[in-house]
Length: 392
Image (cartoon, rainbow, N blue to C red):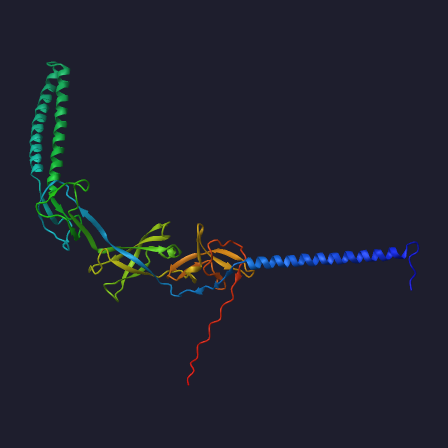
């Protein structure tokens, strides 16, 4: 048995040991309370996290053909207006008529223009006579001025009068030429070879010159042996729309028949509203089997292969910075991933960039969901077993 420490009472040693034990017990109690509070806080945060349902993207259709709606237009389409005013005397081409360049379509009766032309020709003859007289006078005075029979000023006046008469003659001839053109415009001719698609006039109707004001369209002519087909290629596939690439076209009125067209040109700019590239396809139509204004389907075979994924349309978030999907990581936190959309199939949307097959997407995410937000993934519900029929 050990002896007590000399110089220190036994009671004092006992109280020291008891104080240390009490301090240790208090520290352990505080640590336990801190740990319990931390666990309570974690459980509270976890319980406050919203419960979400997740889905996984599916591989898209491996077929790379892109079918787009196309608007068929005539390669050349122009309205025909009158260039002179008068009454329509006769017309010689109705709708559906194929006409050649320069073929007569109609004639206009304009007696006022004819009379103006006669007046202008008379003024031209008068100006020509005055010019001849002024020229003769100037030539005669040129001989006299050398002998000092007349003054130099008198001769200069004669030369100026001759030049003025020549200018008047040129003006009269220009007026005659203008009225001759107006008389020629009484014959309305086809500007190019094509088909009359509209006739908006008839015999006896008063027509006015020009395409504005009282003037109105008399005929419309379209060249249908070659057509333009306009399509809008989605931005994700715009690199496949290269001039010179061949495409196939189909129309509803000729089922089972395919027409071959060629991409002629592109707008070289993405429409900021539709996010598509405007592309023109040229199509030969020698038999006029496809009509202008028709609806066609253009089959574009992109040269580049894009690995696309299909996601539910309900999993998309449309933000100001672009489309997003809410991906749940292994720590149950949300990552708002940007995606590039492809074709829209209604309930499903094609995503061509920004997703992996192993990503977990939140279905029907709330609009207020935030980057890095903690969520709880709901356990998948097991399908109900099939009902069995029991017979007696």
